[in-house]
Image 1 (cartoon, rainbow, N blue to C red):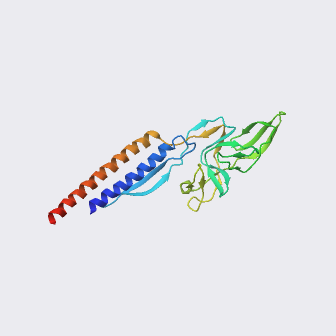
Image 2: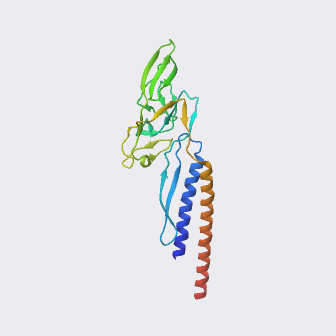
Image 3: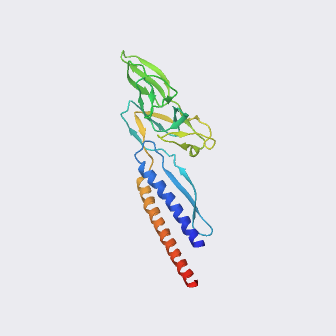
Length: 231
């Protein structure tokens, strides 16, 4: 029975790695997507155990974007947005300006802290510290406020939600100002997925699952033959 347990643990670990690698690859073009990695350990009796899946929050590449209010965080930190479920966090900075002049996400959730662009604005500027300034049609400028960037003691404890949103909880700790991070206006952060690495992981994991399935099938056939001899 130990052989069955070893093969089953290998299948479970391989399928988990396969799942995570496939998700990374599928999101390789998703702005600010953070890759995940399966962490596993070897069992004393043989086989493997999945210890958990951790998100890699390392910086993705900054890409120029022609959106009217595209932002990227250079360094640690997350933007704050307001949703019907409460405050959420994101590094996806492909914001837009809605009909009311508010800066919102693709889903229409306002960027925090909120501010409204005046109708006479013909241009916008956001400095690295997040200060937002509108250029008006009469040549003057108007300060609108600032974009907050926050960080967490344990970003791995953030819970993923749909639409590139994250929620905080006891595992992540509270949001605090992200000192040392800067904002890049007119750019978005790309995914930090390494396609080559994840393709290799996908191939190796698939081969591992097949090998363990074959071993399990062989053990099953052998056990059947032994039982037939005994019967």
